[in-house]
Length: 327
Length: 226
Image (cartoon, rainbow over all chains, first blue to last red; front, side, top):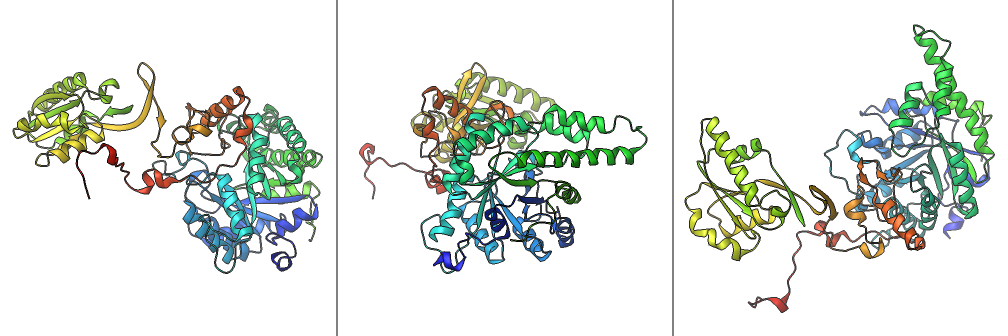
């Protein structure tokens, strides 16, 4: 009966329809403000409207307090963009998560990304207590059981309408132990994930190797894999990601290309150097999309351009992916 | 074992307030072995308190005592007679010892002189690493003898997060990634498939989250209770 009601879709979201259609799918990301102004969401969503299928709304990313993902998702929908609510295990226990999911579904959210969450020591409340009642894999299974079995984590039946989310997760092919990473994806698949988005890819050979193993295990037939990319804004940003961010691998070529982009522009020409770096960042992203489209098992790309949402349209357009297909 | 670290002299002096006569009470068990609150540390801290309070112009008379175990009635009961002469007791035992003193001798306040930090293993002289969180539901049997509850910064039960790199935790490069260690041991025994099973949510009701824990062994009790 559920199948009839939903035409066979799990959530009926735009993102789900696009993934199922077999079209190369594009998702984006939106970082809510560190304040309560709704206009900021509308402003950022404006850059992404018609450019991507759905937009991840981060949940206190890097453990810095921001407008809630669900609240921001409501504003995103009002701006005509489909949100993917992010939910971390860092800040909520199983009661809070389930309650928030009922609320998120009731206000119209249909996509959910299940995350462990960055450790609070990186954010602006390092003395906070973290929760981690569940881990991301247990969260995935809980959301699936809510949707497909109509039950809460405790086994009690959900009364009335059941929240039917398209369930997403993150995977990081660049973290260690590398040999374990495809198995971790397999665990997320076993737990019930529908789509995954990867960590930012700045090491294409390693990503290829990861995908080869994933395809050998047949996982690409069980889950939609969106390759994570992001435009680099400056030489400094490239270096910072290469040298300082845990769980990231940035090949030197990305830093070198950013450096080369400003090699012939005098230091005084600050605007010229900024533009040259930004153009190079966008160009590298476009080239990455072209490479990723050729890799077996890649269903699309997830473009992370936090605080630089304007860059997403030129990237998607440059990759020949506009206009987005209607499904 | 239970591991602690002495509080700063400033904090201790702040806690002592205007006490004139203080008994510094050490413990001969865990905190002796971790060099935080045994007889030797009691002596050093007592001297420091005498000198600093003298310099500050408000001298405190400090006496010293160390009992074998501050967490057992039979070892602290002999202190009863001498406590009346002090304004306050400064205990260098763990939090259990401090509370035992306050419970047994309610007419005098016993203050903590150390911070009880963890259940740790002295991996080498002078280095203690946390190994147990006393979660009440031991998982070591399914994690190849390495505890992700105590040793993973996010207490994950289903493998490493995306912040594990080069064998260390994203929180601090001095923390080995517990799941890297677990994976390595699974590989060593050729039993990687045991890590592929999805572990269900943990029963935190057996940990502190379920409220203060208590064990009653009727077979061991000497007095019958209702």
